[in-house]
Image 1: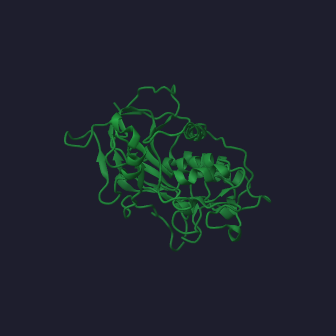
Image 2: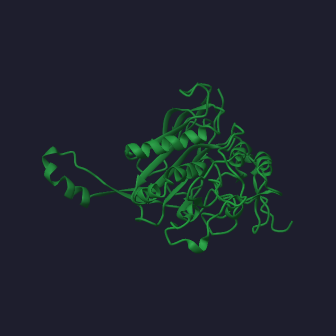
Image 3: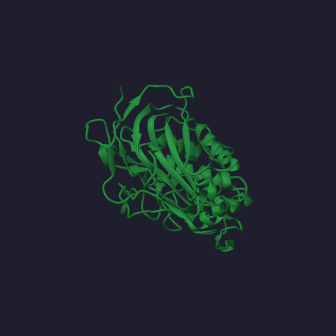
Length: 351
C-alpha cells in the first residue's frame, strides 16, 4: 500500500504550542482593601505553558546530575490497587467545576482499572514558574488543570495532552488540561461540559497523542493506512468495532484539518462516540471501542463501555447547519482544541 503511515506520529518536538492565560492577582496588604478591585483589574500575572520546542526533558535515576531522581515503587495508593487519576488545579475551581472533573476522571477509571507502579520523584510542572507537578510519590497519573481566560467565547476552547511519559510503557505519567473559562457557561448551556472534560482527558491518557511512538526503542504503531483513509490497527478496539456492527478496520478521522484529523475516530462513521472530533447534542458515550483502544495502548483496561449504537439511523453533525460556535447541531470539539505532545520522558526502574 502506497503512502502508508507506517511510522506516522505526532512529533514530540513540534513547533511551540504555547498557551497564555491571564488571571487577576491580589494584594496581601489589608490596608488596601478598598482598592482591591482596581488593583486586580490593573495587575495581571501571565500563566504560560513550558515550550515544547527543542530536545525533550529526560528524567532518570542513572546519573546524579539529572534533573530528578525517579523510581517506580510497589507502594499501594489510596485506591487500593486500582488505577487512579489525580487532578491538580492550578487555580481554585468552583464547586461545580471540581465536581465535573471528578466525574470525568471516574468515567475513565471505570475503563482503566489495573494499577501501575507508583512513582517517587520530582516532575516539573507543565507551566512556567509553578511548583513541580509531582514532588513525592504519585499513584498513578497526575493532570494539571488550569481554568483561566484565553481568547474569549467561541475561540480556543482548550489544550490537553500528556506532559511526561514513562519509557517502560510510553504511557502518561503527568499531563495537562486547560480551558478558557469564557466558554464554560456555553458548554453548560449545551449540557456538554462533562463530555468535553472527558474527551480532553482521553487525549491526556493517549488517545490521538500516543498512538504512534518510536523513541527509546519503544515501538507502537496504532495509526496506520494512507493519509486519505487512516485506520486504527489495535486488535482490541477492532474486535469491539466489529462487534458493534462495523466492517473492515476501525476508521480514524482524516478530515477537518489540524486538531481534528488523525487524533479522533471518524465522525461520519462513529457519529456520537465521545472520541470523534465532534460532540453531538445529547448522549456522547465512551464505547467499548474506545475501551478496547486503551488496552491496545497498554493500559489494563476492562472490556466495558457506555451504551452505544454504531450509526444505524442516528443523525450525525450536519456541517452545513453549524454556526461559528458550532452550536446548531453539535460542537466541533476538534477544531476548538489543541492536542499537546509530551515535554519529556521519565526513565523509571522498579525497585
